[in-house]
Length: 341
Image: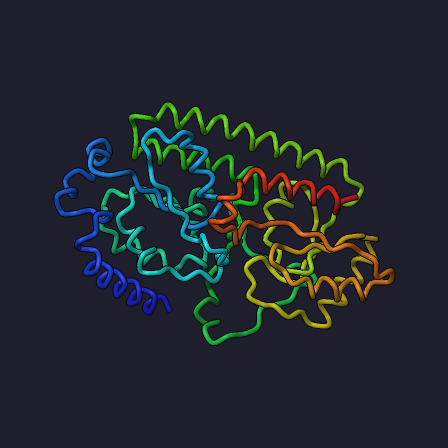
């Protein structure tokens, strides 16, 4: 599989390079000598920062603030496509290959990135892998009691000995605070002239993240209910662990499954009855059919269906309409408080 991805990326770069020779947006040979000097490079063109997902993009915007270097920031997943099903276009690969800073998650969904980076034209590119940056704070994907297991597939033998990590690290405000500082250091590295501004912006933003984290902690500590039940995928493990909450779910966070078995439905419905839960949770863009089926199999059949946003499909249109990492996490907090009543 990885060999095929490598061939695909190489083909894209070869074709893209031929098509882009006359493009004003692509570094020319005369710019190559300036790439090791950020100040010299900025004389020729804007700093280029490429991010894969919305949280990274929004964090960078907060670090840049008024953007004194007029850096250009790209969010690759800007059409609402889920991280787990994203496939880069030729234009995406070319943007990555010539950028100054590239930020990606680093999980199994990003296995295409390794080959893209090997073909990068900018040897001085700074790269941030969120999972690598967090180190021991990254959690392995887990199957909890009652959760639907993945169906066997043809390539299962390729992954038998590989550890699968939970990619949804951005849903922890603690992780976000740590990652902000790492990203800020990288931005300061590519634009040292404005380093003090970026550090000040990062510190101010981290204070907001920490304040919201404290609100989450207080909400969980004061809540009479300590368990969330998701009739859906469950990408919120980092958040529930931070808050000391338990959870049950139909599928793991990175699961490709969409159909829950009778056993899974019954287990979750019985668990709702056992724990006297009044809400079933889903994530954004869910058709809510599994959640509805769980509710109909409870004794009371009157549980509410609530939705939390995992920010896996935020689009460019959402950004233009004012979506931000903090605003979405604030909305998630309101939903969480409602679910824990």
